[in-house]
Structure formats: structure tokens, C-alpha cells
Length: 556
Image (tube, rainbow, N blue to C red; front, top):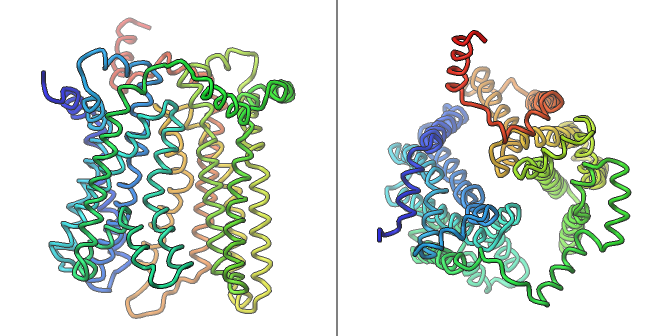
């Protein structure tokens, strides 16, 4: 028998995919663009400042990408096979669990891993400029590679334990978030709430964190104690193999349907009753929402969704109250208000982006959306039902967040130092307006992406990229180019804060308006066609060309 046969096959298949080549080229181009931006920011500051800024920017962006790459590449690799019923067919042969795990790992991650490798030549530019040593460069490269493998292994373990796409991706995200942000937060709490002699305990908590290894890879930290770096890198590498080993043990048994035990059945029934309500509650809830809009009922059957949003806000309020009790009057200042508002806005926007197109994407993938469009419901009613479901889940929390930010603004206006800076109230009001505009745009674009994306996994990422990422990219590009063209070295900048705030606000509103209006128009015109597209796939441009020539030759 060939050693690791699935790995060899999947690598050959991945080598033929266009994404393998285009992804690598696009990431290399992105690194070059970031390098140009960093150069323009540090224009006139010398090559050393440019090299340090470029290296720090690329390294931390690459580290965040590597840490969460498993969510996009391997989190749904095995759970998708379970849903489609094809995972069990692999074990009818003499394949082992490690064959399947390593094969799926190679199939789903090769394009992402090539993208990481494409960044390394750009990372070497600061090395040529003399801002870092050869040892520091290779230690950083080692940590990035280990972080990517760690993320892929952790996500494939969660996928082996899951069947639902949403649960697999959510579980992988929170597991990686635990190592990336949870461990540093725990170490910070240890240092904050205990005496200084607990510093060693905080460092031990940080050892499995990839970001800790990245910091320890720097020359200054490495010379102070190289064992910290190697312990962290070794533990991350060991956890990677542990996750793969556990996944190989689990996957031969996780695809089988087993008779439900009495205790497990009771737990599942209790969980279902908690999410959807008991029989009487479901009946009254269904009657009420079906009379309002059937699509609204279809997207709102999980009654716990609004509760989860309120629970997240309650947890944030609890942390804020804890900080208030700990710091006292020092807690009431703009240094706390601004980060709190940014955190609340980010949580709400990301949550709306994940929910806006989820129902349409899943129904389109399973074929249920074809049944929806075959009913007497018009496209306008279908879209209205989805908006009603989103309003039921997010309208109350959105109004509460806006009210909290207005309270923060009113409290800040009582301080003379805040009143002396006209920028501060303008930023608050612009942020509140942008929150409402972004939520509306995320709703429309999420629904449109759900109807056009090839896989449901891509809907949320594309929605976030268009509404939340694109305006910042445009803002940074315009701000840097404008400053580069108008400012002269050694002279005061002619651009004031009015320009930069206005640029951010206008670009954000234009992006929201452009994408949301376009999505709304396309949805109203093409919703039924897109709902049936999975059964009549659109031919490639080359196929359309030959089809047009064939019709012309036939005289059609």
C-alpha cells in the first residue's frame, strides 16, 4: 500500500487549482502594497525606520492571519464530509485515521500555506536594510510556520468532533482565540490582581501563546533568555501534533450514527427546548410569526438568538462595572469610553455580518431556498422577512449601544479638557452614524453574498471585507497619498483633523451606500435566478464564448 495515499492525491489536485497560484500571487502583491504604504508613512525618516516599520507591520499581520487561518481552511473539512455522508466511505477501505487527517489537511491548507510562504521574501527586505539580524529573521519565520500549522491542526480537531458547519467554525475560532487572546488576558489578570512575585506564573500561562513566542523571537528578548522562546515554540509544536493525533483517533468513529442513550437524549431534548422552546411555545411562536412573514419565522426559529446578543452586552457591562469598581473615579474618562465604544461597535457589526446571509446561504446550499421561491411569496416579501428576523435579533441591542455611546458623549462633555478639543464630539457623532450605516449595509451585502458565494463559508468573510475592511483600505491609501503629495519635509502639515475625519466619514458612507444599494437592486432583480443557480450552474467565460458561437452557427 502507498504511504499516505490521500495526501499524494490531494496535493496533485491542489496543484491544479487556480487558487493555489492566484492566492500566492495576491498575498505577495498585498505585501508589496503594504510595503509601499509603510514607505510613504516613513518618507524622509530614513531607511532604518522604514525597515523596522515594515517588518513589524508584516509580522503582526501575518501572525494574525496564521493564527486564524484554520477557521477558513480546515474547520469545515471533516464536518462537511459527515454532512454529505462521504466520510464513512473512506473507512470502508484499509485507510487509517491519520491517512484521512493528513489528507484533508493537505487538501484544504496548501493554498493558505503557500500564501504565508509568499510573504517571506518581503519580510527579508528589512534584513537587507540592516534593521534585524539573520537569527531574528529565521526565528520569526519559524514562529509563523508553527502558528499556521497549530491553527490548522486545532481547527481540524474541532471539525472531527463537529457535524454542523457553524458549530465547527465557531468552535475553532474560540479555541484559537483562547490561545491568542485568552492566555494574554489571563496573564494580565494575574499580574493585576496578585503581587509581583506571581510574574513567573503569568509567564508560564503565556508559554503556549503564539504571540508570546513571536515577541520572544526578537533579539533583545532572545538574548535575555533564549529558553523562553524555545519552550514556547516547542510547546506550540507539541500541541500541533497532539491535536492531529487526537483528530486521527476521533475521526474513524465520529462519522457513525449510534443509538442515542437515555441520558444523552434527555440532554439533547433539554437543549432543543431551551433553544426553540417547548411544544406549546413553538406552536404559539410559529402562529405569530407565520402571520407576520413566513421567512421571518424560518430565520427566527432559534428563539435564543436575541438572548445571546443581550447576554454578550450583559457580559460587557459586567466587565465594565468590574473595572469601575476596581479603578474608581479614574475609570470615568475618554481613555475608557472610546475603547468600550469601539469594542461594542465591533462586536455588533461582526455579529450582524455573520447572521445577515446565514439563512439564505444554508438554504441555498441544501436546496431549501428553491422551495421558498416556489411559494406564492414575492421577492420583496422574502427579503422583508429576512430583515424582520435581523431586526428582531439586533434592533434592541443596537439602540442600547447607541444610547450608551450618547451617555459616554454626554459624560465626556462635562470635562473641560474634552470640550477644548472639537475633534472629540465629532468623532463620537460620526461613529454613531457609521454604526447605523454599517449595520444596514452589512444586512444587504450579507444577503447578496449568500446568493452568489460558491460556499456558505465565504459569505461572512466577503461581507466583512466589503463593508468593514474596504473603507479602511481606501482611507489609508488616500490619507497617505494626500499627505505624501501635500506635505513637505521639515514643514508643518497643511492638513488638519477636519480633513482626515471627513475623509473617513465620507469614504465609509459612500462604501456603505454603494454596496448596499447595488446589493438591494441585484437581489430584487435576480433573487429567483440565483436561488436556482445551484441546479443550473453558470458556465465559465470560455464556455459562454463557445456557446455564443454555437448559437450563431446554428442561426439562433
